[in-house]
Amino acid sequence: MSFLSEAVNGIAPGRLVRLDRGRDQEMLEVDELVWSDRLEGERWRLAVEALDFSWAIGVDLPAADGVRLSAMASALSFDVPTPGGRVAAAGLTWVGVRPECRGRGFLRALIARHFADCRERSAPVSMLFASQMAIYGRFGYGLGSTGARLRVPGGAAMRGLPKPTPPVDVRFETASFEAHGPVVEAVDRRLGLGPGARPGWTDVAAQARRRLLFKDEGPKDAALEPWRILVASRAGQPTGYALVRRDGKWDGWVADGTATVRVFQAVDPPSGHELWRQLLTLPLVANVETPPLPLDDPLFAWLEDWRSARPVVIDREHVRLVDVPAALGARRYAVTLDLRLAVQDRLLGDNAAVWRLEGGPDGARVTKVADLADDAVADLTLDVRELGSLYLGGLSATALAGAGLIAEHTPGALAVANRAFSSERAPGTPHDF
Ligand SMILES: CC(C)(COP(=O)(O)OP(=O)(O)OC[C@H]1O[C@@H](n2cnc3c(N)ncnc32)[C@H](O)[C@@H]1OP(=O)(O)O)[C@@H](O)C(=O)NCCC(=O)NCCS
Image (cartoon, rainbow, N blue to C red; front, side, top):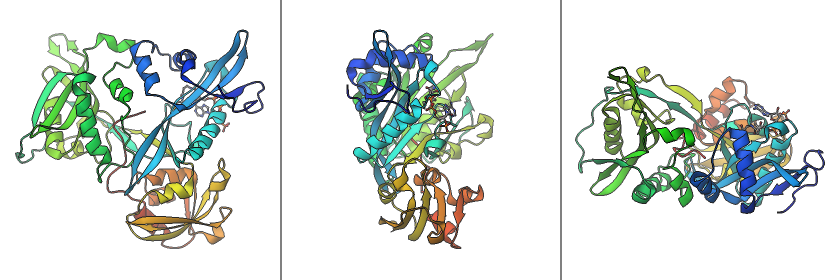
């Protein structure tokens, strides 16, 4: 174990430490206390196996028998598509502070260390899924992508597509890693690595993470049917899959079941259309709950009436530019731009500067113009949080300026930024972390 600090935010003798696999039982205890969960057994084993311990950190407090792990955080390494490029990103995860230790600045200390680790490992971006939306803005994370969960009535009408050649074959089977792991891998590879990959897409390349897809979330799921899978293929090649399970409910003599789709992926429109058609016509299913879908997901175009599916929009990935120039240089821009951005950053002082961003569809160059975020020499002023929201193309500069969160000093600069930061596809990922 290596000590990273002698005192956490002045609370001696709290110590920031690196966590290794040998402390997994203590991590399990913290995890269960924080998340009111029971994770032991196979699921825990896989969760630990999937974790990249080189990112794992914690806070130790002294206890009668040694030390007590009081807070922890870790991350996964991702190679994430950006609009037109790719960036090394850390996916912050497993953040938890023992309930009785809250409010002592442990989260703040863990995040500060996480940012330092990102820099040491040349990951200019940190991303996360938030348990509560209000926690991370203060640390410079901006909302990077959104999604909508639908509850589609069974049998809902869909627009038709021309008969595809080759046709789409669909199998409906009990899902298992052994049988279907390769399908997930093949489809994901085409979606996540291809040139048209969705910005913000995260993989389940680590085998243990792929295995977890096929596992229950916790003991409460044990009463449900096992996960089933619909696999689409064309000319013998897998082209899509949907992991789904039904609750088998009846209301008296009327079938009233819900089918919950955990992950849905398709590489082409005919495969996606056929998978949804099959899901929406499953026998004895009154409603089909989708995973959170990006707002440009084809399902919105296929459903004749998605209003009846009562969409609920939620926040998805929160994005933090840990190294502003490296992150901005790792994406492409929809139109040519040459803008001076005054970026404010209360936590990472060297990000707070005026950056000249010159770029376009083929590349980008970022240079420092002034050491402080000085409005007088900038075209636009914004907080690093807003830059995180713009980064994947999920939120528009015009909308953020309309909310008073971006200031324009040079007429026309906002319109250029708005177009340049936009993305052809809404950002998002089917694989939460
Ligand atoms: C959320 C959690 C990690 C906070 O840990 P903590 O050590 O109490 O946080 P800190 O004392 O370092 O507080 C840091 C800042 O976050 C704020 N904060 C803490 N919890 C918050 C919450 N639930 N909502 C909004 N802000 C919160 C604090 O007010 C503080 O703000 P300030 O420094 O501007 O005054 C902890 O309560 C927890 O483990 N909760 C359950 C698990 C969870 O939600 N984890 C996050 C996973 S994404």
